[in-house]
Each structure stands twice: as C-alpha cells, then as structure tokens.
Image (tube, rainbow, N blue to C red; front, side, top):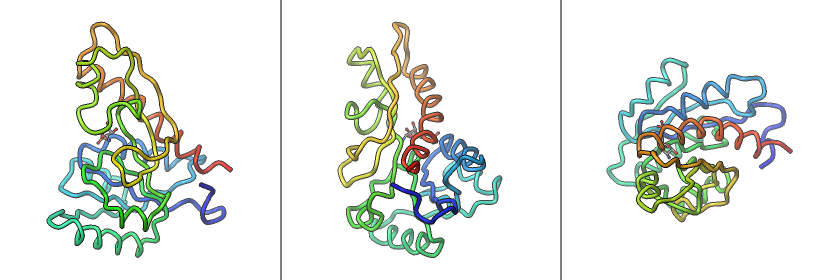
Length: 192
Ligand code: GRF
C-alpha cells in the first residue's frame, strides 16, 4: 500500500474494545517523525478502558453500541467518511466486521493478532498453544479479509514458549512484541 495522499500523513482510525495498550503504543508511534500515520479517530463498541487515551491525547473518540451490526457499521462508516479516514487499525476490537464494511475499506484495514498465524485464529490463543505443548507462539499483523484472522500477512514475530511458561507470562511476552510489531508493519506497508 503506497502512501495515499502525497507527503501528508495517513489519516488513521484505531478500533478497540478493551484496555488499549496497542492503541497507546500506536499513538506514541504516530507522534514520531518517521510515522506515516496520524491517529484522528478512536472507535469503540463499548466504554472500553482504552478510551482514556483519546482525551489524554486530544483525539476524537466515538462509542458505537452494537445492537444491530448493520446500523452500527453504518454509523461508523458515516464518521469515517466525515473524518476522511484512510486506514483502520484494529487493536483488540472484539466485533467481526461485515463483508460489506470490509469491501468499502478494501485493503485499508489491518489487525494485530496474538499468535503466529495461520496457527491459532480466534480467541484464547496462548491457552490453546500451551495446551498443545507448542514450542513457539507469536504475533501477526495482517490485512483484514472477510474470513476471521485470515487476510494477507504483513509481518509476524515468533516467540519462544519456555518450559515454565504460563498463560499470563506468555501473554506478557506477546503483548511486548506486539508493541514493536504493529509500528513496524505500518512502516512496511507505507514504504515504497
Ligand atoms: C492484543 O493481544 C491483540 O493482539 C488482540 O487483542 C489484544 C488487545 O490488547 N487482538 P490491547 O487492548 O491492545 O492491550
């Protein structure tokens, strides 16, 4: 994906549902000189803890309740258009986007997932990897397609599982690597 609007920074929305550590990290990255993106909008489907980073950084936020997916997505699309958003970064957003929504933003939605895809799509990735006595887990940044956690991979990192690993310790290792991987993946897609 080449830079979309010449020398200007790419107007980005981050979608969250939870604590927002990736959001916090992306905001920090977006303020660096080398960042190709600027975060203009934070979207949540509920009163997520991570929304605090919106006010702390003077970024517009919107909470869209998902009672009916069609209505919720229509509301989100209207805001995205109004803000002229060019890239969506999913960061722990727990709602599945419809085909229609994805098509409208084709190739412009990326996600971070806490496993070495295509292994362990879906939830509870660390617990499942440990149960299966895996030697490695990881994290992946990928384009979003209409199939869950299956879009084209942009960048991924393997993480060693130690003998004494617990779900908590593995999750900690993974999130630390996620914070490095997401900015790297963004740099990768926008470098010509
Ligand atoms: C991360 O592990 C991410 O890979 C997954 O959800 C988690 C979100 O964490 N999609 P946070 O809200 O960014 O701290």
